[in-house]
Length: 158
Image 1 (cartoon, rainbow, N blue to C red):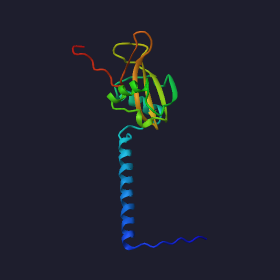
Image 2: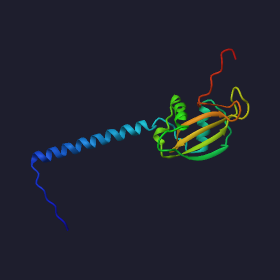
Image 3: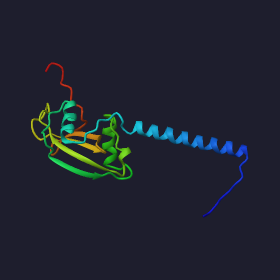
Image 4: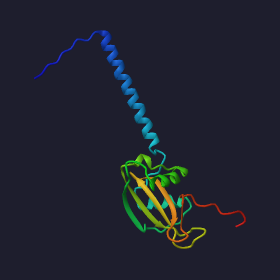
């Protein structure tokens, strides 16, 4: 058995307790701030029906089952093409940076109601810890495109 003793004056004891309190307060503030910024307002999409309902809430009609499910390990730092893709995500309220170095799931669904193309349009939804962190609507191939997840507004007069 080891016994360790030290002498503390009242002044040292008070300073030590105050320093520990300040450190604890800073840790509590940082932890609370991280939790609120990490997507507390984002929905949890743990199963397929929740993912389909989320896409429907954005205006998209999609096939009930995904065309593809893929696990993607994001790099530690944003480099191309992830940097450009994250710019699209930032414009629509998502951000990949909290998930850097983590594995995300990509679910790809066939879009059934694109206003300009009847076939070939797909929706990608990227989830990190069951919360959406990115997504896009795209059409591969010649004359293809990639846009954000929000349903396009119909032009006036239609």
